[in-house]
Length: 114
Length: 112
Image: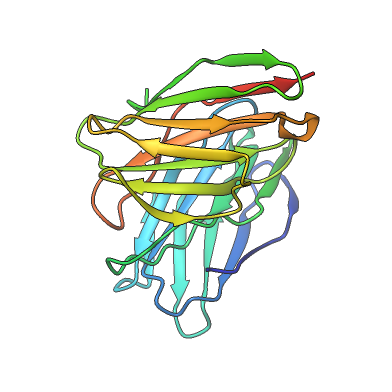
């Protein structure tokens, strides 16, 4: 199965600063790279995803970059706001028609300091 | 609203008992995933079903079992419950390959 590592486990930034979370995976056949956000007491929700034929994708203050050679992808949040405080999970996925689960990273607790 | 429905929202039961958690996926989604999330922990993958067939198993205990029915809803059965099984259990559904997961609001299980 996929071995997924997320760093850091906790990230505290000042409001307005940028935050970067990195996800490293082991399966070179992974071809779908999503990030999920889970606010306290709520369900995880997709915030951005990227497929293996693209190196970067941006959606307003959020971006994801992919380095397939090094087998890692990163979440970038600029101009952080209090509502960005949450736990963020990566979940690289291989899907080739065979058995596939979906392994999540252990999560990064992002704290936005006012 | 994600379109994924999980029932019940809360469940309190005693050790040694058996419970069934239910999940209705989004309309049209064929895949159902089950995850366990303990306090301040990540999402532990339990099992994945696709169109009624088991696709992959994660860290699912032998005391746990699941199935997906012809109408695509899924049930997760937890038996011989232990205190350590207390957790939030999420179901998620997805459509075609490489599409995002849509999570239900979870079932909070408390074993006393």
